[in-house]
Amino acid sequence: MKFAVTSKGDSKSDNLVQLLKQYLLDFEMEYEEEEPDIVISVGGDGTLLYAFHRYSSRLDKTAFVGVHTGHLGFYADWTPDEIEKLVIAIAKTPYSVVEYPLLEVTVQYQDEEKETRYLALNESTVKSIDGTFVMDVEIRGEHFERFRGDGLCVSTPSGSTAYNKALGGALLHPSIKAIQLAEMASINNRVFRTVGSPLIIPEHHTCVLRPVNEPDFRISIDHLTLLHKKVKSIHYRVAEEKIRFARYRSFPFWKRVHDSFISE
Ligand code: NAP
Ligand code: MN
Image (cartoon, rainbow, N blue to C red; front, side, top):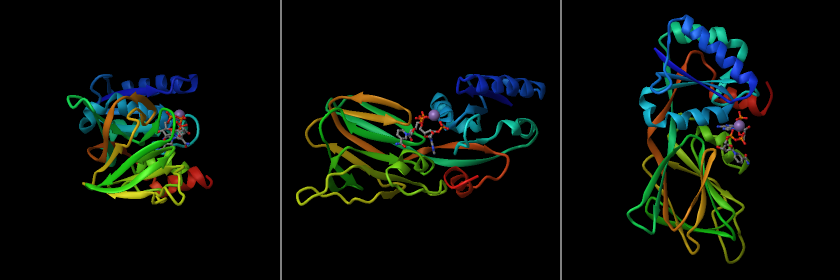
């Protein structure tokens, strides 16, 4: 089996990566950075986001595992002192795989030739560059609302514990194939009206955002934010692709939620 390891880049993570690499080579696994079967990310959830984007072109052939060198993560749920156990599990056991849904984001521009497509593991946010953000929100082909405020956030189930949670969104179990649309500080008065609640949108329903006036936006895909000019529309839906995690032990989502947000 071929493996790759990614590090957060701090000395604790780098040292752990060296150790992991040596252990796995001792078990006669092959180090292969370009086309690994398994990717071990060492650091935090942010490190796994980077690893996901690094290997997003071969998701069907890659399984991810996350080790945390700081606090417990949602993707990075193995501790440094479980390393030996993890290495033996990786080298010896045929692992089972858990798949989590991803978010597909397609941006279309006034120039019809151009179109960009992204996959997000956590979420995509849209904000204006300056001034109030105004968007027409369309769900499943029907106009839903004209949103005015700071921006909008569309998250995956596993991303629901990240930015989405700070916006008052619900935590969604990753077995639910859906995306969640959450508001950022909507303007609500007698003139302007938005639904005010986060919406959970099922598979096969597309949510489209259409600029009302200003067509330039800052669009984030997980940790990456880019400036997009002359945007015609942004399309969100549950992606066909999924992320695959190698599963060696049970650590249920609700327990991760409890241990991360309530107490360990
Ligand atoms: P970061 O600034 O280090 O991330 C912010 C925090 O979010 C970190 O504690 C990170 O954990 C955690 N996180 C990432 N994915 C998570 C998940 N699925 N569930 C729960 N917590 C999660 O930047 P980053 O590490 O590159 O992560 C990018 C993410 O930051 C974005 O995708 C967005 O979700 C989040 N973010 C949150 C806010 C907010 O809550 N107001 C604002 C901007 C961005 P680690 O320390 O383990 O990396
Ligand atoms: Mn981080």
